[in-house]
Image 1 (spheres, one colour):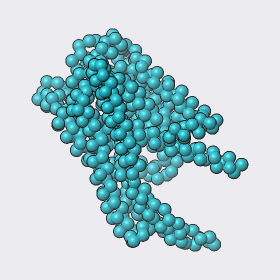
Image 2 (tube, helix red, strand yellow):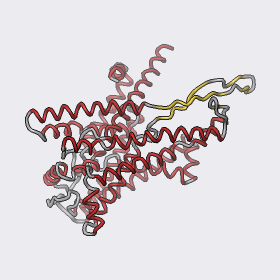
Image 3 (cartoon, rainbow, N blue to C red):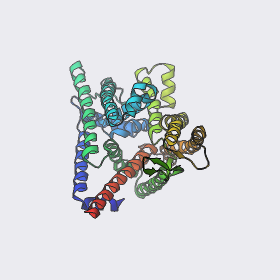
Image 4 (cartoon, one colour):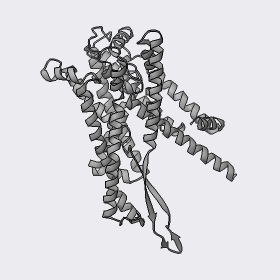
Length: 436
């Protein structure tokens, strides 16, 4: 990884892309600490400190994960990249349901551009809804449970509208900067920005664990957590790279006077075919009842939710979280990998799996292998996502455990993809230099 970045910095074109990306990320982090107009920053910081070190730290660490600390500061980039992620997931799911979107997906570049445009519009709609919800919670004093300080100076309608529009505009700006990184930077703009927001929380979280104990015990806890984090990261890298390669052979065929085919390739099927999406789904689903309990705090259902689903270390929370991740993994893999479509494409171009007949037997075989891979993949995702709860049991940490499952999955996945992109661009330039 380090050698790839060193070689990239020696190449002028790639060096400009990397420096451009770093400049965009610096602006991104700057917007994450600039407060929205009408925010009482002193009271917000005091309430945030109480919330992230108290009994409900698990809840706030989860909703603050993708904003890099900006959400609980009510910054102009408070919503982070989450509205865009949610919009992308919704459009991806709707592609399976709505024939028009499925047709656009099959049209190639023009259809993809149209779906991207729909994603931008939906992102802004979701940003308005999210901003309205969080500003309402801040105005009503419900953003931080147990904190009675005034978080805003003015509760008038004009001031609230300005706050909502500012956060929405921040989301639009983040979306634009992510596309700039994709076009003019190292690529994977949105993923790199998520990586930045999550990685920005690591130093403060590690230092908070050190400060939670006095003297040598604090440094020992710091070293142990860092070592565990590196081991977990190594295991995640191994699992993310694991795949089942299904061999595919193409028969020779004559097209005019030319002979095509006769090649052998493979279909790479990853153990973690769904990525981090099921974890995000499950986290969002578990936050919905908590949000309901904040708006309706007095009924019996809300009381049960406050008791069992607010803290991320409870038995009910982690059991439901575990089951939801497994269910969403199977669901997401089922809608993103279609064995029937893959088998039809192979048959159309004269491809077959050795020992398996083309058509329906190939489809059944692919579905069988996919189900066998999804089982360990879903268990891996569910277990890796319970790391913060396990850390709470062993370290009794009230602060956010820095090497949580979701954060590690995203950091490792984005890091591997970015390095692969840089290496591919390096190889392309080396081939060009050789040909010249």
